[in-house]
Image (cartoon, rainbow, N blue to C red; front, side):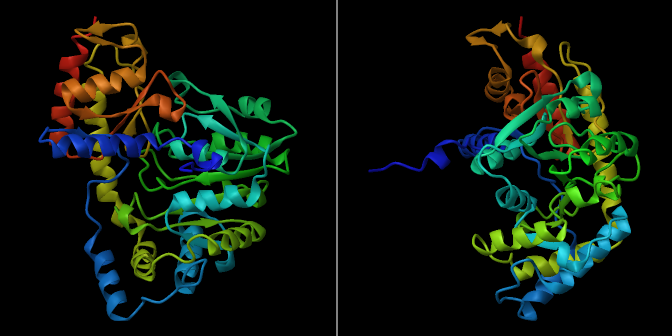
Length: 397
C-alpha cells in the first residue's frame, strides 16, 4: 500500500521552494526567467570563509562532531552574542544545527505537545506553521497590516494568549516583510510575555545584519524575559552561506539540552567543514557584512521606486532583510485575455507566465492581499523585472 503518513499529509510544500522548482523547470525549457522568489543572497561566500573551509579539510575536520557543535565554535557564538547583542549565553547554552530552520524545528519539537497553541504573527515565514503542525500543535495567527508595517502590538499579543498558549514564533527583521521591531516595541511585547511565564518565544534573528536603520535589538536582552526566549541565528544570510547549512541558537539551559537530545536522533552534528567556515565568519568583525547590506539597501530603494510607479501596487518601506511585500489586492477581480485574477496566487502565476518573473504569493505567508518580492538579485535583473511587471500589470482591467 503506497500511503504516506498522516503527519506528512498534514504538511504543505514550501511555497518558496515550489516556485524555485517551477522557475528551474521553465529555465530548462529555455525561458528567460528572472527569479525573485528565493531568500538567497546572490553574493558569493567571502574568500576568507572559503579559505577556512579549505584549511579544515587539510586539517582533517572530517569526523563526527559533537551533536551540539564544535566546542570552539560554540564559544565563538557565545562571544558573538555578547559582542553584538548584549546577550549572556554560556557555551553550553549554544546548539549548532544544519541551518536556522533545524534550530527552530528542534525547539518546537522539544517543547510543543499535541493541542498546545503557538502564536505566529502574520505575515510569517512559511515554515513556522508547518513545523508547528508537525509537532501537532495549533497555530494561532495574529493578522497585521501594511499600514502598521506588519507588526503586532502588545494588546494584540495579549488578546491572542490563552491557557493553552505555549509558544510564540516571530522574526525580526522579518521574512517576508522586512519589518523589524525597535527596542521600544520589543519592550512592549516583553511586558506581555513576562506575565505569561509558561510561554516560550522563538526570536528568529537570521537577518540581524541586514538592518537599514541602526543597531539590532534582541528580545532576550530584556532580563524579564531572558529565561523565556530562544534566540535563533546563523550565517546563511549575512555571510552568503546558504548552502553551507549552519544555524545556531542560544537558549535557557534546559531548552538547549532538549534540542541537543532531539538533534542527536535526527542529524547529529552538522558538517565539521561548515563549522570551521562558520567559526571564521562569526569571529570576524560584523563590519565585513556592511558592503552587502548597503548593496541591499540600494536595491530596496530601486524596487520601491519602480513599484511605486505601477498603478495599484501599495508599498511600505521595509527596514531590513531583502524583501518587499506589497499589497496587490487592487488587481483582484481584474482580467487580461484568458487570465482572471481572483487572488494573489493567480497574480503571481500571471506575472510568471506573462512577464517571466518569479515571485511568491502572500497566501503562503498568511497575507492573502500581498506578494513577496526578493531583491537578492542584481540591479540589472531588478530593473528588467520592474519593466516586465509594469507592462503586464498595466494590462489588467
